Structures are given as C-alpha cells and as structure tokens.
Amino acid sequence: MKRYFNYCIVWVGIVSCLQSCSLVRDPLDSFSDVTEGINEAGEYVAFKDKASVLSHRQAMYDQIRNRQEHWYLDLLLVGDAHADNAYAGTTGAEVLPFENNSIEGSNSVLARDWSRYMEDVALANKMVQYVDSVNDNSLTTNERRQYKAEAKIFRALVYFDMVRLWGDVPLVTTVARDITSENIEEVYPSYFPMQSSEKEVYEQIQKDLLEAIPDAPSNNTANKTIFSKSVARAVLAKVYAEKPLRDYGKVIQYADELAADGFALEEDFSNLFGMNDNNTDAKKRNTQESILEGQFFAGNGNWVTWMFGRDLTNYNSNFTWAKWVTPSRDLINTFQQEGDEVRFAQSVVYYQTSWSNYYPASNYPFMYKIRSAVNSIIKYRYADILLLKAEALIQREGGDLNAAADIIDQVRVRAKLARLSSATRGNRTALLDALLKERRLELAFEGHRWFDLVRLDRVEPVMNAVYAKDSGRRTQVYPFTNFSYRMPIPQSILDQNPNLKQNLGY
Image (cartoon, rainbow, N blue to C red; front, top):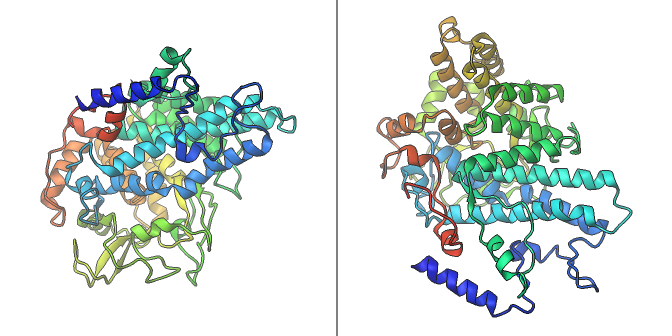
C-alpha cells in the first residue's frame, strides 16, 4: 500500500508540471555539475565543447578515488565480514548484520551503495550517449571513441559489482528524455525501470567490454588508474567465471591476454601494500601486478584507512573508535596452519586499543592492506585473474589439473610456501579445495571471499559451519540458504520504484 501511495504522489507531481518539467534521471547531486543546458533552439546540449567532455571524463575517474564507500569500504564488508574472513568490527546496527547474517532491506549501507552505483551508471551513460554529438572540431574521432570506450568499461565495472550483489537490477543504458505533456506516456516508464534478469545484466557487461576493447587505451605500465583494454580483459575473465555466462575457455583466454599485456606477479608481495622505510609514502605504485588502482598522495589522501586501522602517516588520528572488518580467528588460524608468514604479515597487524569487542584490547588484530592515507586501493590485480585461470583449468571439461596446480604453486612460491603435494595435484576435489584456500589467503581483505563462495556454491557448507568453530563470531541470526546468494534490494529504493521486486528470502 505504501509503495502504491508513493507511486501516486510521484505521478500527480509529474502531471502538475507538464508544461516544462525537466526531470533528468541522473542524480541531481552529480548531474547539476556537468549539465550544459538548453541551446537557443530549445535543444538539450549535454556537452558544449571538448573541455566539458574532459571534465565529465574526469568526473568518472574521480569516482574511483573519491567515492570509496561503495567501491571499496562496503565491498570489503560484504566480501570479508559477510564471509568467514572477518567480523563486522563495530557493533553498529547497520554493520553487524553482515557478520551475523541478519541483513534486511532497511539496511542503510546497501541503500547508500545502490544509489551511488546508479549515479555512476548515469555518469557513464551520459558520455556514451552524447560524446559523438559534441559540436567541437578539436574533439577528434579517435578521442570520441576512446572516451566512449572508457565510459563503457566504467559502466561494466559498476554493473559487475551490482549484479554480484543483487542479481536482477535495472539495466539503464541511456539518459532519459525530459518529460513534457506530449511525451509523458512514453517517457515516464524510463524513470522507474523494471529489473533485468541477472543473465541480461551480464550480457550487457560483456557487450560493453567487448565493444570497448578496440578503442580503449592500452595498458600503461606507468599509470594503472585508467580504464584500459587490460581492465576490460580482466573483468571479462571474471565475468566468464560466473555462472550466468560461464565459459572456462574464455577465462583462460583473457587471463593469457593479460599476461601478453605485460602483467605478472610482483616478486615481493609487500610491494603491493607496503610503505617506504619512513612510512611517508606507498612502497610502490603501478606494479606489474596491478590492473586498476585508485592512487592517493600526501595532501589528497585515502581517508578509508580510518575505517580499518591506523593511518601510518598520522599514527594516532581517528583511532579512538572500533574499526570495521576485524580479522576473524578462523582466518588467522588458516594463515597459521598454512605457515603463511609472508602474506599474513601484509594482511593482519596487531595494535593496542581502547576497546575489546572481539579480542583483548592489549593485542587487537586489524586488516592491514590499507595502512595509510597514501596507499593505493587496488581494484583488480593479476593474482586474482591468474588464480581464476587455475580454477577454469580445474573446472572445465577434461580439466588440466597439472597446469592448474602449477599456477597455484606459482602463487605459493612467492609466499615462500611449499608446493602442493602430488596427492592434491592429482585429485580434482582436493585441488579445487586447495585453490579456494589459496584465494582466501592471497586475496584476504580485498573483497573476494564472499563472491568466491557464491561462485563455487560453497556459501551454505562454509558459512553455516563457521559460527560453531569460530568462538569470536557473533551468534548467527538466520541460516544461509539458496536465497542468501543475493543481497536484499534496499526498501527505500522499492518504495521509490513500484516496478522493482524484492529478492526472495527478504
């Protein structure tokens, strides 16, 4: 009834301003900064010249640096604290449900993320739809193609995160026209789109990436912040590993293309997340392993470090309150049982605190992969794709277990661990288990664990068992079921759009 009432209010509001209504679906807080307006002929002009195109392009890139909540912070909450890698960290009512499996549609974290993802989609759509019509001869054909390709890659990144979180989501690829008295019947539905199926969303992601590759910039070893051909290839490898479009041959193909682009494992794992000897700067940026990263520098820093632990460039700042994504005992035990000292030292650190929510205050663990305001946020890195290739080699028909084991060993050798045993190498089930554990240790606190469990149908057996064996985890509220693989659609979004349906189980 509430949704119907809101629907009627919106409709009446629109009808009341038929003569010159200018509702633009792009969110007002971002759209107003980039709108060029109406020309003398009454035509909508998205970009008046090349400068405005470049400004909009920069706005897309700025999302990776400046909107860290949905691109990184909240994905770690889902990827690690909603899995067995971490506890929520704080007892806040909006954060704790990710640990004890009591997430509901009213959760404000998910509402924030949904809205911001859709703002990102609007930014991308505007570039894709209007860059070709810009009346400025200084904007070359090749530049138009490149900027459109970058926007398509950006849109694909956004929808890849969204579809893995929620499954069926609205697939919006154009900018809606203004509503007038003449077109209201035609245009109105585009402001309240229905959900597309998970498969349809994946198909759009695939389409965007394949169309973008020819015109996107090539991999730049000195600048891993751009939406390059290599970023598109990395996301395609990840897309083809997921169930809706699963194609293990293509996972292997795109992993190999990334190797041909020059990507490889860093010899020293600490290059990825470490700092220089004086703790004044990141140890290394633009590594040969980094595919896409957001970079931060002194004076324009990475504030998200406040949420996870200490900022080593300003040791005591913002360290008076409990942090998010606290390493779990189960994960720490897995590191210790494996004898994995190299990756553990780069993933977990202990400090003395003033709180004891999960551990004694005198020796409290924190996730350590973002340890200062100048550390990069690595969105995609080659180790993830390389291990996905190993997964594809194991899973595909007539799989090559030896080749998969060689890849896993390559990652283990960097961590100074022993190679897999012959018994593990020769047994498909054992090797897949070894792969999943390797991904857990290699990619801890990078937002992958939950999605690995979902992709490999391991959510119920892993997550329903961890509460009994991990003494520090809050009491489980609901069991994990086949409905748990998707997050709830935010209730506030359902209230705004009568055409959306809640995911089953919520």
